[in-house]
Length: 113
Image (cartoon, rainbow, N blue to C red; front, side, top):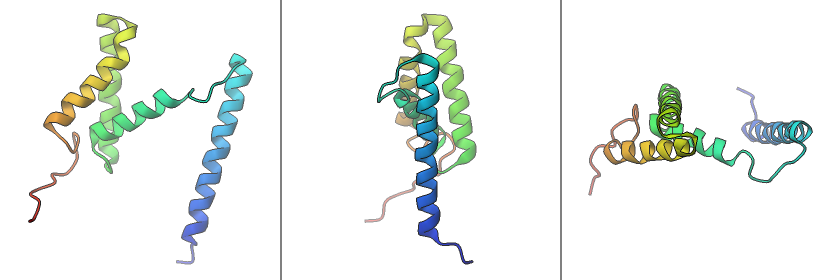
């Protein structure tokens, strides 16, 4: 259709880097400090939400994020704020033990020998 795939990929990575840089600048202006790992936990939770719902499934990622957020906040109210992250990742581990493809992920079926 006339769209250069490599150019679009390059543009997306450049724009993502620019937005991350602007976000870091705004963080530094607001709080007066910055570290290299400021957004690590947020990114890890976003990945956990996508895995909970099923990789490649948009509705699953939305459901996984909702389930993760509700569970973490309920646990923070029940056990205290320091247990919030722990319960979120325990939920991820327990769910993946029983449903390896996530909540709305497709069944992998049998492997062919």
